Image 1 (tube, helix red, strand yellow):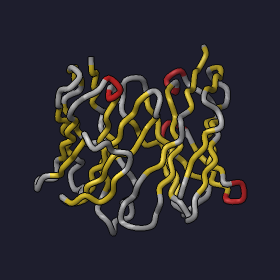
Image 2: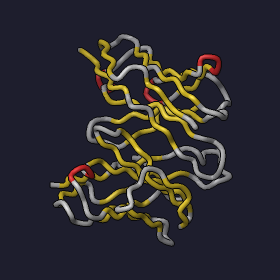
Image 3: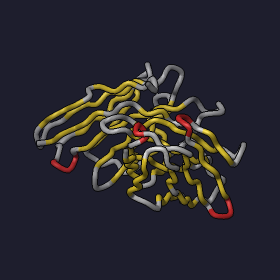
Length: 115
Length: 116
């Protein structure tokens, strides 16, 4: 079984300051890990994906995430927040075995960016 | 724009009614997934189809059913609707098995269902 824990339900930062959204995962296998973003009244957009090629993954809009197996973490960071980053962020794990690539979602972190 | 389309965007109906949600996957994708997003339950996987066949089931109620047609579009049927079925329903698609990105799902914009 696999699971994802997003450690903060809400994060608030000032524009121009760093963003850190924390995620821990549990998986019996070497998982695929993703971060998705959901802007208000919009669908889910893929930010980035980890699949064991490199532990530091760069995504869109300046986001990146580092896979740390020893800590079972996959935290999302951005050096400088922008107002347009305000959204809900989901950490997601995929079971790489079998033919059904089911995703397990974390509970989400709401990011607020203050002017 | 992910390339996954969903219709309708909004749906308002009454308890006890039946509705159909439609999804067209990205060109070339064979898998279609359905998810429900509600305030109390978060994002939950409902069901997956691959090239017309049911592949996996999640927390899908017996009142709900889905199918994938030969042209690969999919429909999610919700019947005997209850107030608690009000939610955002997302469809996602992914590339075929054997491709490098087969585990990456691309989401549509969702259908917002309101049951009154």
